[in-house]
Length: 74
Image 1 (tube, rainbow, N blue to C red):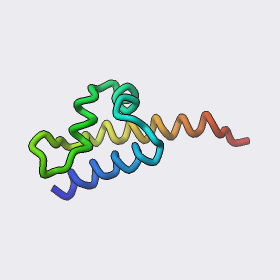
Image 2: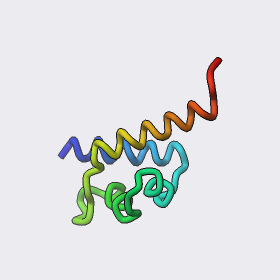
Image 3: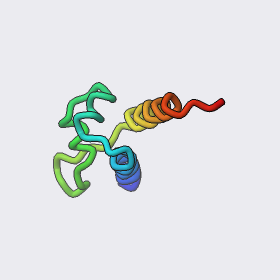
């Protein structure tokens, strides 16, 4: 259960840090808005789902590459 909370909390923190909407996250990850919403729900809710580790990794990579493109070094 701790793994679920960590993965979901990390996804939520990154989403909020970048000021992204559920729709923007779903478009980035090519998934449904319902999937993203289920990752953001409290674990106590029956419709809560674990953020797949692959989705979290892809989310981080996409945001990292966007930041790199906006702030090129050199």
